[in-house]
Amino acid sequence: MKIEVERKLYTEQSTIGELSIDGKFFCYTLEDTVRQPGIKVYGKTAIPSGAYEVTLTHSPKFGRLMPLLNNVPNYVGVRIHSGNDANDTEGCLLVGKTKADNFIGESRAAFAELYPLIEAAVHKGEPITLVLHDNIPDEVQVADAQPAKPWAKSKKA
Image (cartoon, rainbow, N blue to C red; front, side, top):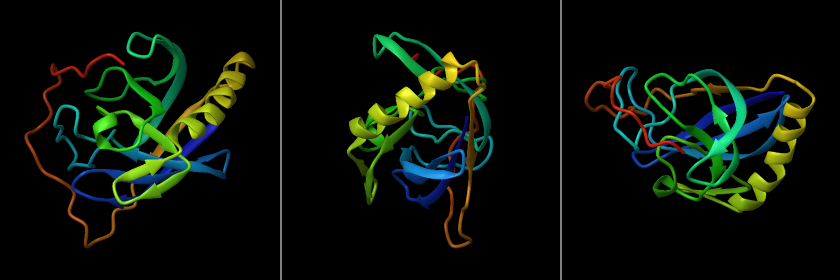
C-alpha cells in the first residue's frame, strides 16, 4: 500500500495536504508548520518530507493499535490519527474529510475509514509506505526556529 500526502496549504499554524492511497484521493491531512530543513520546535513542527514505513503498534496514549511512521528523523512516536487542528497534534499526521483554514473536519470518520485499509494491508503482509511531498509556493516562507536537537524526544504517542 502506498499512501502519499501532497502538502498544499502552508500557514504559520499548520500545513494542510491531500492524502491519496495507491494514487486515488482519500482525505485531507493536517500537520504542524513546515520549517526549514534541520529546524524543529517540539510539538510544533511538521514531519520532514520523505518516505516512511508504516506499521501498526500499540499506542500508550490511545490505548490501542495505531499507525506508526517509522524512522522519522528527530521524532519518536509519530502516528496517523484523528484531530482537527494543530492543537491536536505534536508532530503527528491528522486525517479528515473536510478542510478549512488551519482546520480539518470529520476527522474521526476519515480515520475510521483509513484504519481498516491499513489493517488489511498489514494482515496481507503488504508493505505500507507513506510519502510526504512538499509543494511550497515561492511566495511562502517556511518557519525558522532553533536547529533540531537530536536528543530532544517527542512524547510517545
